[in-house]
Image (cartoon, rainbow, N blue to C red):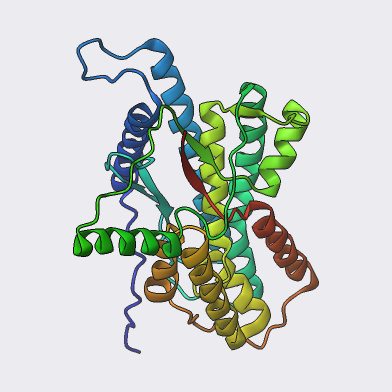
Amino acid sequence: MHPVSVPRPAPARVWLHLLLFVVTLGTTFLAYLLLFGRSFPFSGGGLLAEDRTQALFFSGSLLAILGSHEMGHYVLARWHKVDTSLPYFIPLPVPGSLGTLGAVIRLRGRIPTRNALVDIGAAGPLAGLVVALPLLYWGLLHSTVVDSPPVPSAFPGESSLWVLGQELLRWVMEKVTQAPPAMEPVYTSHQTHFGDNLLMKALTWLALGPLPEGKDVVVHPVVMAAWFGLLVTLLNLLPVGQLDGGHLTFAVLGPRARLVGQGVAVVLLFLTVFVTASWGLWLVVASKVVGFGHPEVLRPEEPLSVSRKVICALCLLALVGCAMPIPLREVWS
């Protein structure tokens, strides 16, 4: 008999995962201060205690949501004996961002069955929601209702590619014809509006009751973190390629899942052109980086169980509940 060498799983570099976690904790802490704080650690006046507390609320809640999402994938992958890495948190030390691009795990083994594919794919978004929704409700209870003028909506959206293209064409024509520039409006206030979805609306109603016309909510930092968690859940549940939603769609439809992913790309293109150009980035990520293909499982002949079909339906409801046409909107008045 001749010995057969079996490749060993890659050793877990726990120090790297911990380092990325700590760095991301720092970048999200500083990102909150840059976006919403009144002080900064390295400024002359130092960091105000209130800003420090709010930034810690934001950073800790955000990483708890992202970590629970990825640990959901990790635990179920281990349960099905699929070799996988611990979560890698991705810091984003860029001013104007939220300080992170989220977190990922790396699946190093093939997924054995479609049932395992559903378990692993659905565990992340559902675990993330289990943490995000209570945090969102708690944060709304600690938020403040204030007077706020209604924000008009338009179609095409003011930040859509259609409108931005018109403004660019107008600017070019002014330069070509040397016409006097149009008078710029004078703004005295600026607000950042977080996009609403069905889950946000329902929990706002439960926590604060129905909001009268002319009222809005100044949200607690935990609400901002939970809102970002809902956005991450939305993006991951899109039925494209090897996103979480793509795993579930492939488990149900097999190779026909590619057509669903291509349909989602058409929807993203419509949103980019007519609603907000910010969807263009995710259109490129979904169609060019992630792609529409999906590898086959090791035992495709094993049927999908009824309970896994129920889980897929639950994730579809979660996708609908998290959907928001305009995630962020800057309003000047």
